[in-house]
Amino acid sequence: MLGVPDLVPVFSWIFLRGKCRYCKAPISSRYMWTEILMGVVAVSLLIRYDLSLKALFYLVFGFILLGESLTDLEVFEIPDGFHLAAILWWCLYLPFPAVLYRRADGRIAGRSCYSRRYPSADHDL
Image (cartoon, rainbow, N blue to C red; front, side):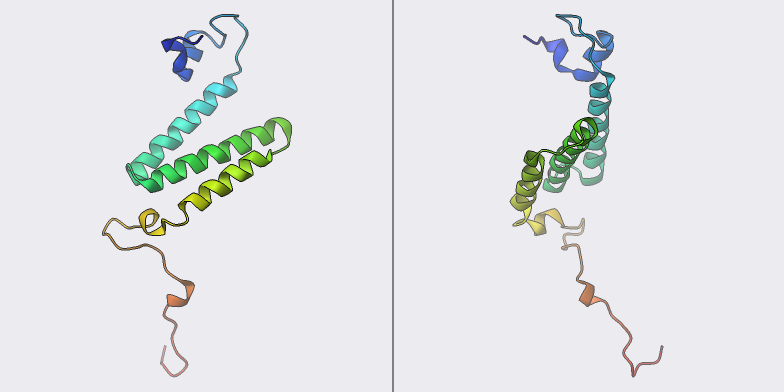
């Protein structure tokens, strides 16, 4: 059973010198670097998007993509569960584009490619 110190992955890995507290088996540093990477991603998203649904969306999507990447690097195969999770997560947020893409001034962000203004043939450039 894990104790409280074991529940903080980076610090427990450092304090235990990369070994299991109970059986003393070595633990790969890859797990510590994965935790650090996702911590940096999470803090970056919170700084960029504050506490918002957009930050949550990108955070979970980032977790799914990291899981896909690490699994692919290890076994050269991506399980269908990752694809399914990414598709379901994306579909869950499709009804909320106004919440996800609202600018700081309250307007909806994004433009159609047809909304650009091009000079007409009869107008002098």
